[in-house]
Image (tube, rainbow, N blue to C red; front, side, top):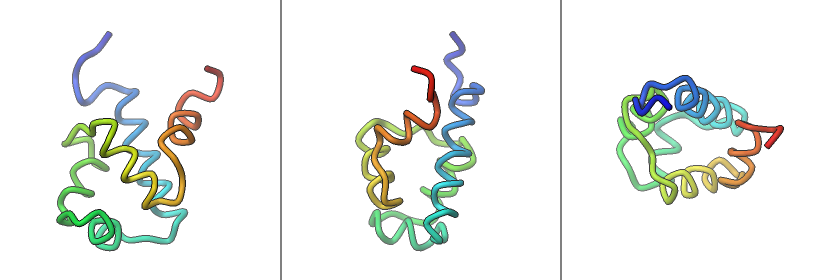
Length: 79
């Protein structure tokens, strides 16, 4: 198993979070403000430069009007 933060699976997560943000009609700045973070936080996790923990994923999912479980389901719909 690839442990790199740049694994194909992790990069799919990053792309999905960006897609969900766009679907929600939010900018990186807006998401960052809702998370009480800097815009660079959003930019870095969307670019795969920063690994998220499960608590951060949960918070981001809520801001994007979904759930961490729904995000995981979209990543691996067959599981």
